[in-house]
Length: 212
Image 1 (tube, one colour):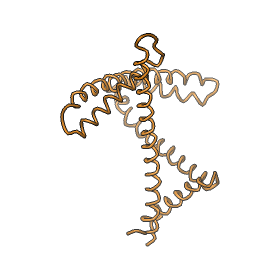
Image 2: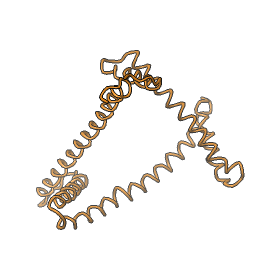
Image 3: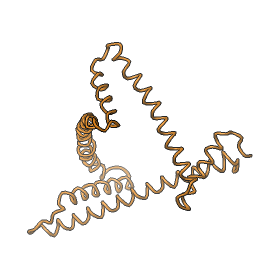
Image 4: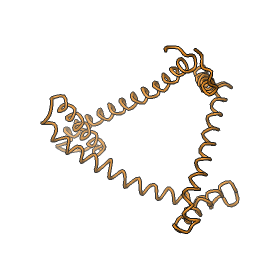
C-alpha cells in the first residue's frame, strides 16, 4: 500500500529527482540539490546558535573568562564579509590552522606511526600462535606493512652491493600499496552502491509499500 505520510512522499520525490542525474544535469536534480543544501545550512545555523548559547553561558556568568578569547576570534571571522577589513578574518583562521596542525601531528604520531609500529610488533608474535587462518592473516598484515614502509623509505634508488635486494623489497612494497589502494576503492564503491540500494529500498518499501 502506498504511504500516506507526506514526509515519505517528500523523501521519495527528492530521491527520484536526485537519481535523474544519471541522465545528465537537469532542473529536477538541481532542485533536489538546492533543497538539500538549504536544509543542511539551516540545520547547521540552528545547531551553531544552540552551541554558542551552551558554550558561552559560563562566560556570561563569569565562570570561564578564557572563553572570551574564543568569542573574540569568532567575531573576527565575521569580518570576512566586509571587504576593507577582510584581513582581520585571517587571524582566527591562522590560529585554527596552527592549532589544528599541531594537534593533528601529535595524533598522527601517536596513532599512525607509534600505533602502527606497536601493532606490527604485537602481530609479529601472533604469527606463530593460533589457528593457521589467523597466522596467515597476521603474516600478510606484517609483511605488507613492512613492505609499504620499505617502499616509502627507499623510494630513491640505492646503489651498491645491496641495490638488487632493496629493489626487490621496494617493488613488493609498491605492489602492497597498490593492493591496499584497490581494496580501499572497492570498499568505497561498495559503500556508495549500498547507499543507492538503500534509497531504492526506501522507495519500494516505505513509499510504494512493496515487498512486505
